[in-house]
Length: 284
Image (tube, rainbow, N blue to C red):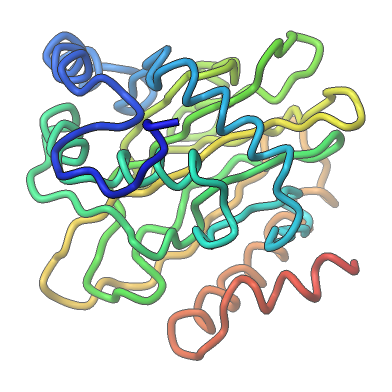
């Protein structure tokens, strides 16, 4: 199928309609800026349907290279090695990291000079299996290896066909003081969510995933950065307790947060990679 051929001259798009995207950017950028509890937008039907279908099939076919993220605040698997992805998945990521797409993001979020991450640090293909979850948090605010890069924007593309309310797995956006959930977004097929990354962009999947065995909550996660021209402080993922959490749960969330901070420090200053840690975590 021609749409999965990677060697296409920029700014040609293989997987989505760039003209339609640019029209959407013009229509949505004011709503993006004004959205609560932090700037964000939901874009349905981002990819051509046949491309999105092909990516779903590749999720189901992929067997090797998945990394295990299993600790008190998170339980999911991820794949960020393009060589282990299928051709449609690689093509989608290439389009979403292309100069034409990133410039459209510039206009949407109001930041000039956004940079796609060629290393897919923390991103790529992600799956949450039944019983998996992601506690509410703010994301790491600086690239673990490219030390002058500050993280500015998150993009999540959901790829869940026939997703039902009973499967849960909602993406939740919480207020800056983490007192209430302001918005809950269903992770339906071909839905894209773009939001600003900041010290108060609290989000997660705290309700967990309850899809049938053999299925999973599927997404592509991509992050966009800005080069600050100087070393950015290492600000790792910050998990937080929710109202109603027990004292024990609050203590465990905070203890795990310190472990994540230490891990982030090691990623920046040592050769440690997620794949190395995954080999340990998948046996826990």
